[in-house]
Every structure is written in C-alpha cells, then in structure tokens.
Length: 351
Image: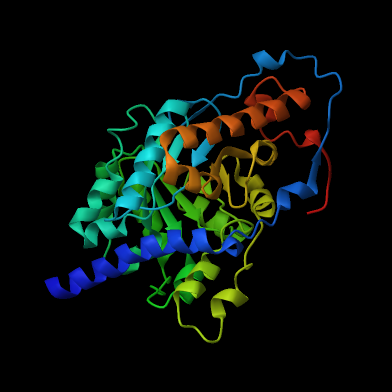
C-alpha cells in the first residue's frame, strides 16, 4: 500500500469516528431503547433484613477490584479534539469511580499516527481496568498478533477486545466483509497473546452456536453485546447514500441482550460473561448479573456526559451505582456473589 493510499484510508477511518458521534447526537433513533430488561420482574423484599449502607456492590474482574460491576463500553478514538476529550474524560472518571473502561476500535492508530494519543489512557487511569480493542475482521485484512500487541501496549491495557460487527460492515459503504475463517484466527490470537482476550459483538448478540465456537477456542471472556441499544446499522445508513435503506431494514436485527445472556448460561463454568447492549440503568445491571453477567457495559448513557466534563461522567456513574445498590437492597442481597446467577430472584418474565 502506498503512503498516499494509506493516508487516504487513515483519513476515511478517522473521519468516520467523528461522523458516528455526530449521528448519535443528531438522531435519537440510533438508540433503539428496546427496554428488553423491563420484561423481567424481580422479587421485591419488604423485609430485606439488610442495612442499605452495608450492601457491598464491589467485584473483582481480571485481577482488578471494581467499585461495582460497570464497564464503560467501547466508544471512540482518533485524531480529533472531540474524541480525545471523550476518551480522556472517560478514563479519568473510570479512575475516580473505580470502574472498568474499554476503548473504541484502534484500527485508526495503524493508519494515522496522530490518532495514537487518543488511546494512550493509562496515564489518566493508573489503577483502572482498561481494555484495548481491534475489529476481529481485520485478521482477514493483514492484522495479526503484532497489531494486537501494539494495541494493548499503547493503551497500557489489561486485556484486548476483538469485536465482531458483521452487520455494521455489511451495510457500511466501505465495509470489510470477509468474515470467513475468523473463529480459528481468534483462537490463534488467544494462544499467542500475553494478556486476556475478550470477544464481543457490537449490538447484535451471540447465538448459542457462536458462544460454543468461541469456548471451543479457549475464549474465557465474552461480551454478548446484544440488540436493544445503539443501532450501528442505522448509523451506517445515515452515513451512506443507500437508496435501498439496507441499514434501516436491519436496524433492529439481532439477539436481545437478555436472550444472549441465556444463550451463554451453559458455558458459565468456562467463560466469564459481560452484558452490554441496551442497558440503561442500575436495575438493568442487577438483572444482567442475575442472568449470569460478571460485568455490565454501557456506552450511550455516558457519551454526552463525556463530551462535557469528567465531573458529569462521574455523576452519571455514581447515579448508576446508587440504582444498582438500591436494587440489591430491595432484593435482600448483601453482595454481588449472592446476586450472580441467582434466577430465584426473578418473579416473572416476558422475554
């Protein structure tokens, strides 16, 4: 690839990052707000036999203690003041609030040198659990263990996400659409990487067959990232000149997050599950943990605060923590260990 072409590709990837943020700002419909978790009703305890102030929401994940099981899900990165501000504010807030954070796709850092600064976040979050991120499909387009290690090193990350976004690539005008043979390549990266490898969807969820395949490759961390929140298919439609509205047709395609969590249930003894996709409050988090999630990822509720200030992000996180603790209290649950996988706490469901 010539330098001229490389620069052109880098500019395309970089500008797409900002376009994504603007689309989310301008079109409220990108958040599908499906509220699937509202279809789960939990058992209220009039006599919880607990002191609310003593409820302990803390967890340990990948060797790091978190104040409660929140992951700031992957959002953005690139050579633009806005994305640098967002990532910096999120990282500083993750450090202050004691939660985890994943960065957006790092492909752009290999195409545009000046994008690297937006991912160098360990300086802002020395104690936080940080996760690097590369699109798994890039393993079919020249990426390998070298790029994976470089992504981890730049972030100072505790682990690496490989994200799967087949629908987004399919409707994206410039999408990378060769997803053949990826499962074994993902397994190869897991065997060569010197830190934990996590695999996630980006809003369409995982089938039982997909989860079984990942587990067969030794993947110990899976983020189900189900349908119900941000629709990247709709966002890509808004970016394109697609007269046939392919992206709009598939805007609600996928497996809802609660169902994806159920698909993962048989594999809890071999993998740790992260719930993301349509979680909007601490009650959704509690329901996710009941369904077997070790961490709960959110992005959309934190994007606007991250564009404003660190304090606004911390305020939002603290509100989520209070909601989560209140739900635990009203369920009569003293700590997360008693919440995890405890489906006896479900009163009824309409999923």
